Length: 83
Image (cartoon, rainbow, N blue to C red):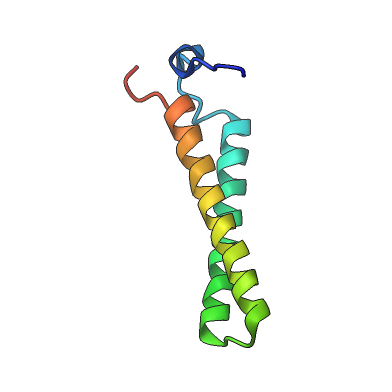
């Protein structure tokens, strides 16, 4: 089992990365994934069809959760507002 010291990793990004084009791209990609899944989920709620819809909705919910976690992780480790 590999143990990762998150405190040490957090210290690696000593500068704000919010202006870094790669940081921006990762945030925008996560936001786009979240918006796409959300819009699709709203459509499923508005016009439910069958049992397959439930599986599709669960998948979309997982996509939303994943995108939110990616955004939170980026902000936690690379948007160091304490500096």
